Image 1 (cartoon, helix red, strand yellow):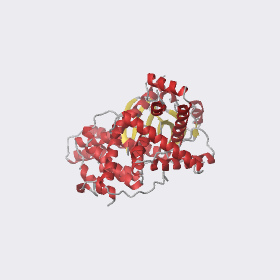
Image 2 (cartoon, helix red, strand yellow):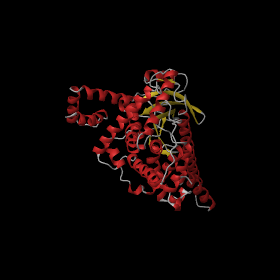
Image 3 (cartoon, one colour):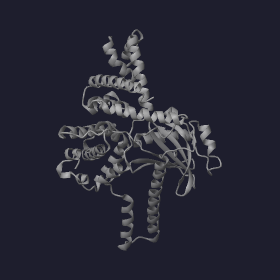
Image 4 (cartoon, chains in turn cyan, blue):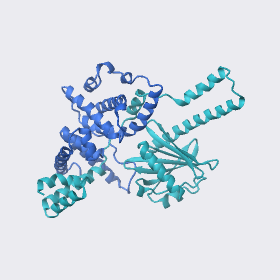
Length: 251
Length: 205
């Protein structure tokens, strides 16, 4: 291999894009060529500077809103309510029991929508400077005790760093005017807030994925806890997070 | 109407992008939901590339909006897999259309004022001096990337900022992987030299 080839391939080496054979060839050349070795060092250094410098922009909220409104989606909750009212107006033969059942269902849907809005708002608030964590640590044994005495529940703080989700810390937040635990993780450059409150009963509820204002929310109930994971990462990755957390909590 | 709007939006939909989408109802609503859940989480990524390609905030804003509308219109042709490269490719076409058609796209220096000065989490404790230094470094680097010729700027942005693999970069810029590699090597050389020069001027340290 000559220096010209190595000069291009060393970038693929830095980027982890070479198979084992090619990587070995480049490394062999570099070991015997001080010039290329210096290049490799330089470009690694440049890469490091670029990673630590933050070069990403954040889309303005107004742009997000413009796109949201240009791609309209029907509101299912509204349809439900309208359906119920129509049902009554038409004097449909609904028994009182069924009617109250439907009513409860609608209330629940509305309640869910409200909570969905609140956890997304709490997530957005947490992204303001200095709002992300009250206790900042990647050590679950530091974060968990911090909640002691602050809540009537001991939130599960699980370190998922090895599984690709880094624990950043914890925070006390409010959802529905009640204090809740927020456990904060990150995936690459994205923040995941996991909100956690005790359930009145200890029923487990399967996971549900919803999205609001471009944020994904995965909610489920497990071990007497209601959990909401909120993030701007894709639904697939948030599902992966939820499943890994669920599995760790079962252990 | 700005230069970019003229070339990015066909006359029929200029000024009212929503018209092009029509009103979603019935099964379209499901499509819209699906599209939003998949595509909106990548908004910051798309916007970031637009900023680097177009180098100013208001053109980037227009281009990203057009990108999402176009992506939604052609969502049926999306063949699954990761959606980010697909969206970035659409954005790139929108941005290029604005350059090709537009006789001149007024160059405005992107000051990078709204760069995320630092991640909102801190990996370890950082002194205020270090924070200031990092902010300066970010702005210098942002400027230097902005000064690269377009074909080098885009591979740097796709690789270093959007974190795409060579394969995905090749898809987005519609070029063979060999081209991606040689372009990236040249782009990094230019950037390294510019960075060293900037350091010499005492800009960043």
